[in-house]
Length: 621
Image (tube, rainbow, N blue to C red; front, side, top):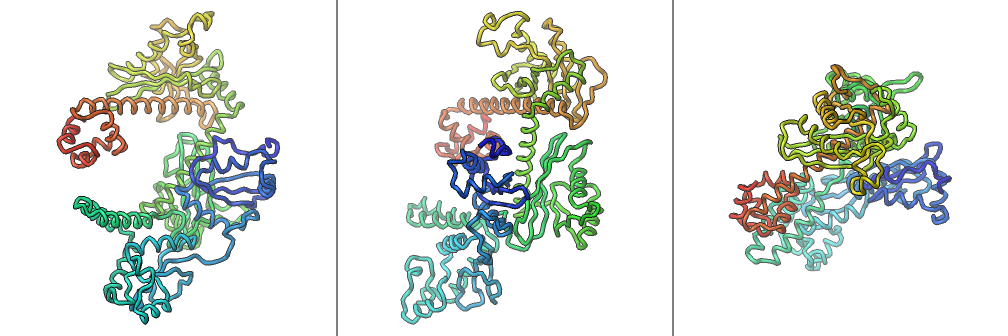
């Protein structure tokens, strides 16, 4: 199987999010489009032994030379995008969603004397309000069924309605409360039309105030011990909340837009472009861009647009959509918009999506870009040749005697000078050695340089002297006793000088120390007036940056953990608060920050917490 699929992605590179994947052959043709609630779990099924696969699946897998995926927010969005791409690409190995039907809509005939709610694919009926489109008939049926529980509008055909009116007997929907039964005058036509208007108003605005009002009525009924009414209102709330769940993959209008998501660090940017045509995502493209020079977000956007839409010699330009949606506008956005309009031959609106479906899709594009950046970094870090070149480059640039095969990086984290902690991460041969990581709590310090000095003094005293065996050190301290080839400090010249002072005071003169400053990615050596400048986009700077970021992440996570413990211990000092109630508080608000921002009334709503205890909690935190 390894020979058959030598190109297969590593399992760790495949996201665990919901999404849609495409298998492609050597000519770039899409062989198969599929969806998954968990992309990693689903795609792993294809990479088992060939003999274990179904014959058709085996033929598809062996015909492909690549698999690509796009992350979405929910499984329902994955279904919609899968449906769109199957209709677009007509993959030979897909056997569903190939019908050429138009999309179904939910419609209400407001022009009728007795309005009717129904499902249709015909958008040319007069006096009818349309909502949709939906990608599947079952989806619109579920929406209609849910809404009829709250807004019992007539949904029967004209023939059924006339028969019920002649027989003066309501149909089953009237008997079970899903129709107000205007056919037998259970409500007047005016009252029924008012119900239909509420139905349309809700679908037009997806008014969450309606849900809030129903929820308040449910609580009031429960307090008055009217439990049947409360249960009925609860069902109404659940039905409307189901309808309110909107998708960002399918738009209700004929949206024509190019939407960019950009994730970047100091050296590299990953770009995800979603092409929306006719209200549907018709394509997704992705790039990884090496930033040779320092660029602002606006400059990067301008650089990308020029490369995406700029014409190439002897080739037609890639025409922009009516809307080009970007995460940041460059300084000369007006001129860039004019250029895009010239390329398209029609007006182009260059802007940042602020709210609604387009902003939600922008978040999805950003998620895909972040994942692409993560995969790029992982692949680059796992390349043995690149790691060897990086270590050799560090040795050359810092004038070290040997390549630093073991690098230890230190970072200090605190919250406004309180809760000071530090981290030590270890990379050996360019790869993280996580079982060698260490965390430090710092009880008292004056500033970051003092913190670095304290941490280095504590770490250096455990170094094993040359020639001493592991057995003499003891098993519990072996990992902490290895001598690094380079001590890397997250900071500039002051922090590096503090680390060098710790080395001197420890009597150690054979370990190099350097610091990496965040703003310009400069490398500082102790006692030097000027930094060492590494070439941008080089393997050596990429490795140092990755080590620094890992130390920062490790320190931040520890600082947050100690902060939560500190708040929890303060809460447990409040009379009447035990571990269970403290856990319930943190679980209810989700974070310490939200708990601190909560009012006494909001805290009192937590089970087991009353008004008096809520005020005591606010005083404590």
